[in-house]
Image 1: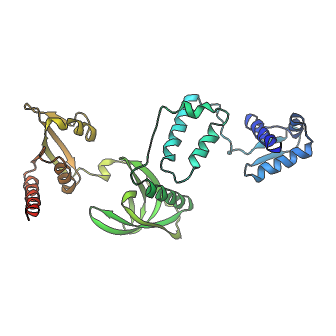
Image 2: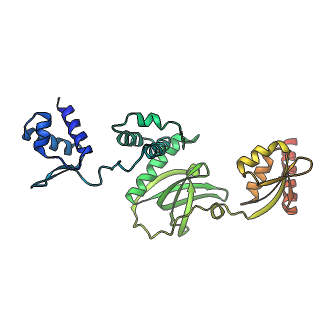
Image 3: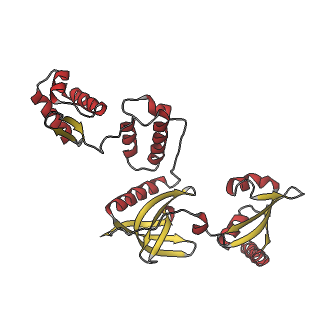
Length: 302
């Protein structure tokens, strides 16, 4: 069948740098004219083939379209496929699955063998995120500005940016780009973006500064605090702050000395433990938190 012959030709081209039409004609027991028509059909299917005439001529796949896997070990391929699986967890298409199929061609056991690492980058907002990620990817590729309504602790604002990077960090997705309103580079959390759309306006890529994700810059520790927590919250401190971020007191309670970006984040974190965490310092914030708790009590009493 013709489709079998086309697949066979592609298989030979993938395994050889260059093959002549007479060799292919003899291999598949057809005429050279038939091979030439097959080559045209393969090109029409979107696979670029190059034909060179002369003594050292032949048919080959265009440079840059085929990846030479001879320098990749089985372990390398497993790591690549694990990464592609993680991207597929937030993709709204099967693009990455199709790419995995291409990379694992000729080694059907490769996908199954790489199954010991499972990475899921999706979230509770997967449907919304998948659409946003696809839209931002297209905007970055097409160099198109995007606009959206953004919600942050400082309030609600309309933003328009030149998008440059999609980032997965701190268990969330972000877009980093040049904000035309702030005339500077900013990073925005996708979950806080509403009414995302393209502007239809293209931009000329800027000479962007070296990109570094520094938690201290994005979430600067503006407030240094001391908090005492019950002993059974050790797991929470290890999970959120890391082992060594606290000391154990003689009575078994835990003392945390650390930094928070703002008092709203600090108060919300402490109140989340109910009565099992106590802010000790600074004294002015301790008093302010006491007033917040009193206000909550008054509301419930009413």
